[in-house]
Length: 138
Image 1 (cartoon, rainbow, N blue to C red):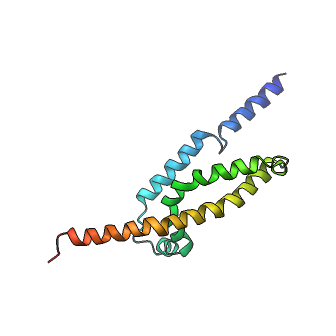
Image 2 (cartoon, rainbow, N blue to C red):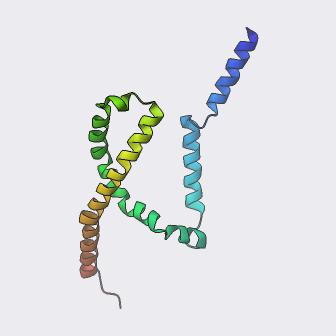
Image 3 (cartoon, rainbow, N blue to C red):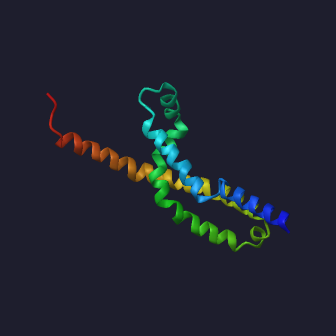
């Protein structure tokens, strides 16, 4: 009896240190944010090379549109998938993977279109307005 109590206590302590715990996640996020605030990105050649990658620029450009549309696109797709008996018969891992493979390209394509049609034009208009009304430099 004592051995089982010690084992369960040990497992509880391990669970408290698990990466799944919210406290650990908050500490990790805080540490990353502190690192980002302290680190000098302007003078780091490696980070500027990574930042110039086209894939990362694409994700950066479409991130706002992605946040705006992802739920609008996910709900109808999830609704459709959860109506399918073959989908419900799969394990959670397979359902998650299938959902991710179906939803990601659709959402990113829609976010990219939204970026190209609305955001990039808005940025272009904002730059023209800024150029027109900003004081001239002498």
